[in-house]
Length: 261
Image 1: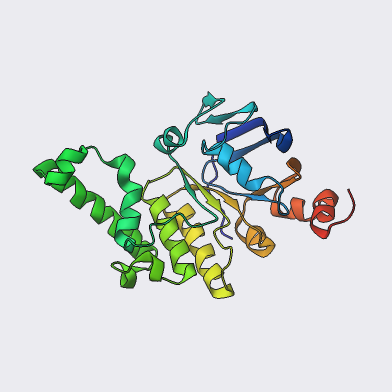
Image 2: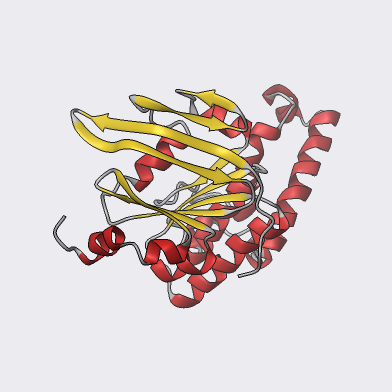
């Protein structure tokens, strides 16, 4: 893995606790993300990884703790505020519009960037038409980048799973995020599809300068592409450091091998 020009802390998660009906999903979790790094969150099933992403992107409101993004600290943000600040998210279970084609799915990621109102867009008035053409040109660049030109007009529901995941990534990239949250981007993929997705994740990080926060079960992938790894188990943080440090951490080994706690 090539050395990345990693900067200052861009996202700081402090003492996050989240519970549902008395069941603790997350307990006093703290970690940070540096600009331009690939930061992985790993742990066994039920460790709280997706809950952590849901706190970061405003889907859940933690009972305790705060999240600081680019120097601004919040105890709660809604999903739209988070998106407007420059945080995008892909989902474990694809949330694509299956009946719409690839271009229109990726265009849906441009909504926050559109200045013209719905009336102007519906009538395709001059400004609205120019704006739409500019957005479509941007989307075409993403389609080229993700190497899905051949499927531009194909309904997403007809695409193989690995390509649907790529479209989901494209829609997130259409938001031009500073931080991209990826929830198991390689789940359900074969070896070749995983290799492709790894390459795209690293290229997004490298070419767009996007900071990546990644949940992934495939330890080989995590160790290959991450700069730092935070490990959760039963909603608690049990490890944090470089891939090598985490790999040698006895608590992490015990959690993954199922040794008694």
